[in-house]
Length: 291
Figure (tube, rainbow, N blue to C red):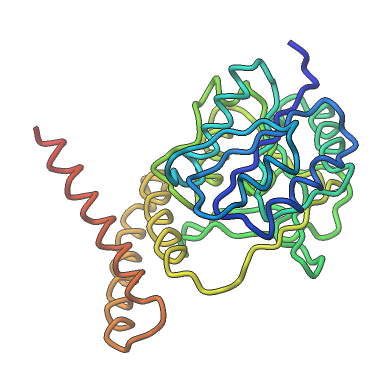
C-alpha cells in the first residue's frame, strides 16, 4: 500500500454555485498523489452533472437520496478504503483549499505518529478564523470553536471540524465509520471523541488553510438538526457524574422553548420538533429495552 495516497471526498447536495469552485481549488492542490471523489446526496439541481462535465477525471458516486453528512461521506469513505487508499480528506463542497493545504496537513501527520485526524485552520470569507480548534462545553451543551492565539506549530484539539478533516484508515479500522444517527451536525465531534478514546490524537495544523463560505441564511431544517444532533451527542458522551445536571438543563431549555413557541419567536417551532423527535426516540428505546 502506498502510504502517500489521499482520497479527497466532497459531498454534494444541490451545490450549484459552490461545487465547481471547490473542485477547481482541489484540482489545483500541489499534492499530486490524490484521488478526488465526488459523492452526490440526491441533489435536485444540475450541480452533480455539471461537475462530471467540468472534471471528467474525478470519481463520481451517487446516492439516490439525501443520506445526511455521515451517510453521504461514508459512501465515499468505503469506496476509498476498498481501493486501498490510506488517507481520506473529508471536504465541504462550500470550501476552498489553499494550494499547499493538503501537503502541510500530511507534513503535520509525519511529525506526530499518534495524529491520525488532522484539520487545517478554517477561515470564513472575511479571512477570519472560523475553526482553529474546539472544546466541548458540557455545562452549556455546546461544541465550541476556540481561538488558535497565533500558534505556528501543530497543536491538539478536543475535536476537529468535519469541514476539511483528514483521517487515516487506521481510525476507521479501529472505531468504525461516521455515526449515521447524526444526519447533520455533531458527527465530527462524535467521531473525534471516539477516536481520542481509542488512543488517536486530533491535531490542528495552523499553516494549512481552507476558506469556508457557509451560507448564513436562516434555514429551519438546519436549526432542527443542530438541536436534535446536540441532544443525541450529549446523551451519548456526557460523563456519568454530569448526567443529572444535563437532565435538569435540558428540562429548563425545553420549558424556555415552550415559552418561545407561545411568543411566536423565529425557529422555536423547529426546536420544539427536535425535542419531540428526541424524546420519542428515548421512549421507543426504553420500551425496546423492556422486551
